[in-house]
Image (cartoon, rainbow, N blue to C red; front, side, top):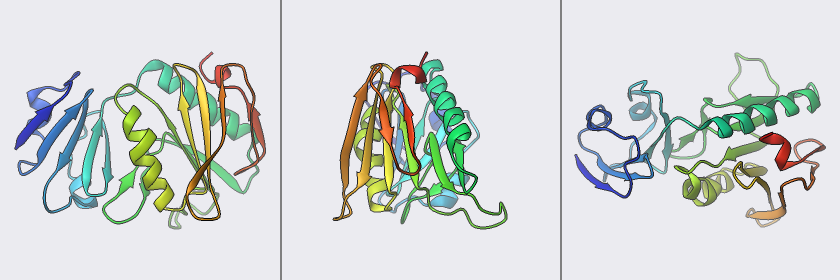
Length: 208
């Protein structure tokens, strides 16, 4: 195992020894990235230890993120609760950890997602909305990497919530299949969306 670090954060030697020995390791702000010439796949992800970190697979690279902060979880819980009270019966809101297949060698766990409600024994349908709440350890990952991943997977709507500002950025697929920023709202401004269902809220209320 070879390692390159930017900021190890809370990562310890014990954390690294639990991961595949043939991986090349990069640590950025406490997030561990594991790569190798032969791409990792879902069985490799499933074999990782249950160590309290979020494990995702992005284009064959395993991304292991530290546990989220209090304000992160407050934003996730508040948004999901609001959606639960607003969404019609045919739509369902779920929160991480919940695996979403996002293309070859990719499986991610959006902080919040909305899917068509279906029988729990049926295959999980693709999400209509994926929401990522930024943390210091995942800011670049969610702003760029996961945006591209959800875009390729044709997820109709992708929201990025910054609980520190606070702000909400709403992206929707355009006619050419690329995300278009349709709204960016901060503080007590009102987010007003129609997809996947009509909803209004303020970024500030998510972290109050």
